[in-house]
Length: 354
Image 1 (cartoon, helix red, strand yellow):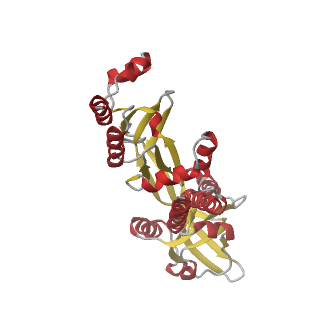
Image 2 (tube, rainbow, N blue to C red):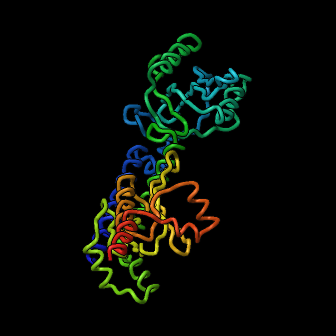
């Protein structure tokens, strides 16, 4: 029995360690390992740019010149029919004095982060040089679709710029590796939690005691020996993969541990299930002291265990009924007299015969 307990304990923990590591890895991949770019810090744009090399990089720039806007994203509330701006796209102008390199590029920011760029643009329109720069940090990537179309149309229609000074690239603010930075943090936090779960599982695997609840049962029942439990465990009926029902004891696995209970003390047992968000499937039992114990099992295993009790435990009422529950709660002594099942019938027949 001890070897079986150790095997189940090891198998359970290894399974959850593997699942946790796999889920953590998937979350990191889904985040495009953005946390690495965040920890390394953004690349500061300076000198002459090479857009192809910068593609997809996490970058930062102190914007000092904004020519105008070229696109706006909106969202409409279907209930109120109110439209709000979610993001804005600006035309940025970068100039490096040392290399005399100038380039027009796009900047996309959320509506909540537009104020710094609006200030620069308004100061330029009012005829003054911007009083201070505004830092933008995000993903440098090539524009496409409508955003590129609006970018080109705005430059052609409203600004007289040399084509060689225009690049079809934009800095997408608060993005890391092309993904929203908030989502990167959420996915990374999820991965960190799963790695912690894996570490806890590893600690339990190395330092845990597979016989913990068996020893606890023996400590509380001085008349029961380990050899008795081992005999019942080896001779008992295997129900599904997690339950062994013996002559006197029921062994059931909950998490990594195997528990044991004396089912000859049970006076009532029935199947309970609940679907939905907090779904449950279990055998609910009550002993002579009205103490409730729930054994988690799927429907098939639960009914198989109840059938075993029905056939072997004459002292036990098996099955649920509302009137039975009322009697149990209000008149326990009468409830005990109601017991009638296959095992009870066989016992009564044997008593009558002899």
